Length: 166
Image: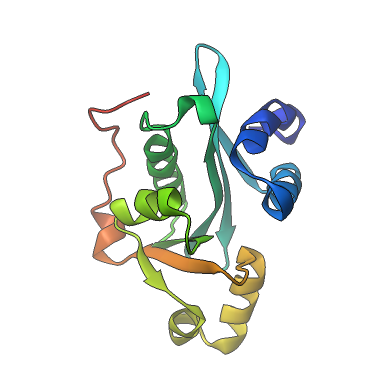
């Protein structure tokens, strides 16, 4: 979604986040490289904010679904779309950071094959300096866990919509 049209997505953020997460999500929405949206009946009901990182890695900043439209598979559709977009651009892995106690986000990503990793795991793959740059771009904060979809999991990732669609 072009930056000039993203204001229509602010309501989704307001129903999904509070405090510092809302402020960060709003700022990220205006600045992020890629913003995608899910619509029902012409109304925006979900969004994803994405970025290609150095090398062949994608990063999911946020996936948010309006409160009134949750539990309908929209988050899964947005996640499948994100992975498909990243792999079409050459990504061999996709990262996401989620709140350690955010059960819904953890279930979404882990249910699609994402596994827990950390700075040490990233630095083993890329070296310390590149890992530091990636972490800075990802903006992983205390209380969040870093998840990754890579290797066989990304090549076998289901990007086609499942039976459960919004």
